[in-house]
Image (cartoon, rainbow, N blue to C red):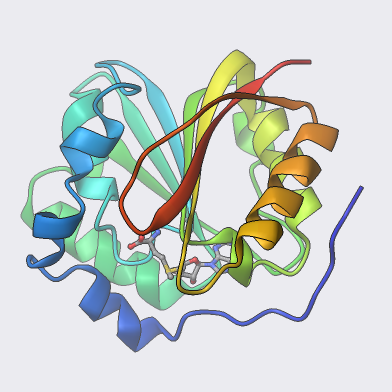
Length: 190
Ligand SMILES: C[S@@+](CC[C@H](N)C(=O)[O-])C[C@H]1O[C@@H](n2cnc3c(N)ncnc32)[C@H](O)[C@@H]1O
């Protein structure tokens, strides 16, 4: 089942605001992701922008882990790679350029332990397809943390998207408390 709409993608230059150090006071990546991410894991981050969460994720998965960052804007990924390189984390990160109709994750089927989709899905034209592709990339029983910003997304829209994820083979494990975001932890069930 799909929910196809017109895309409205965050302009690449806004990516610089999203990596502001001030954001840490409101959203602490280690606190948000700590319960789910372990050393050695393969993590998929969909729509990472310039990598506010990707660099902490790369630290959390350690030397033997991997973070696959897939974004529709190459400019976002360029900046993410530059920042990862400066931080000595680039060897743990793979970047993939998505198109509006595919995440291009063919190389990662059934290999991902944890998926992180933060403030992205409301920008995606075919949300059902995003969950379908994430599902295919995940290991059975893998977890996906899905969050949407309360300012941009109405509660009924978030619920509709969660229902869409359920129709693509996810179950809701629990609601997650992240300030200013609707958040839910999904599990690949089939
Ligand atoms: C609002 S930004 C959030 C960035 C990051 N998750 C954060 O919280 O800092 C949304 C990001 O999703 C990306 N995006 C939008 N549509 C996408 C799609 N169809 N596939 C992959 N990424 C997409 C945008 O390019 C942008 O980098």
